[in-house]
Image 1 (cartoon, rainbow, N blue to C red):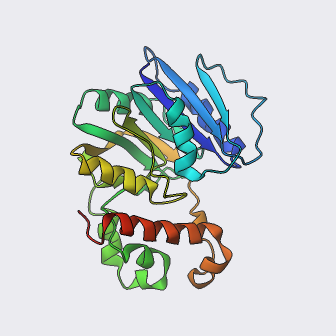
Image 2: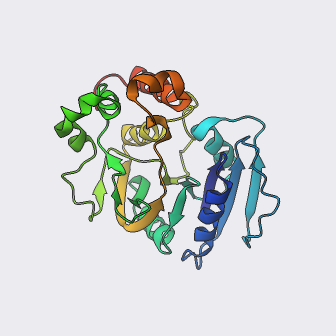
Length: 260
């Protein structure tokens, strides 16, 4: 099989349906593909799905395994040569999958390719970045970011036009096409956040490229749920903020404080 598309749902049923519909509208002629939907113990029911996929698998987890763990359930059942990881809040432009597939299949040195992400209003969403320094998340989450804007602009590669194909440190995990050969899934240490940075860093560690491809466009209806509310209260009130902090610690414990 050419491609396995893996989507992890957690209380996102309506968005997931939009995502699935966009797959059906995609240019997939001649591709042998399957769609694997993982319901990550959120309570959403998909018995009423009426999408006409030739190969569709629904996996219902009995426990919320987080972003990485939920995707691993799907990856373990995937039979494609390549795996497309999709967040349920994404909506594919018709040519996006084909463009990424043709590129990664034709580039043996490329392990991961990702698209240009667009916000709901079609403006650019910064989705490729340099590997973070330990203080980067602090600047992004607190008032300190106002004083270190140059660092944050560097981190998000704002000096790059985002209209050309480019090798990058890492790509946002909302939409990643990954070569299945040698891919053993996401690191289980990361329940939520940093799992995308980690998998891209592992790719570079093994000498394989991570590539941003703006020819493929995907709308990401993104809500930074871990960034809600005042930063000084979020750590107490927002579970996702606490998960972000834990993953931040685990990431730098694993990889050290440097970028490379």
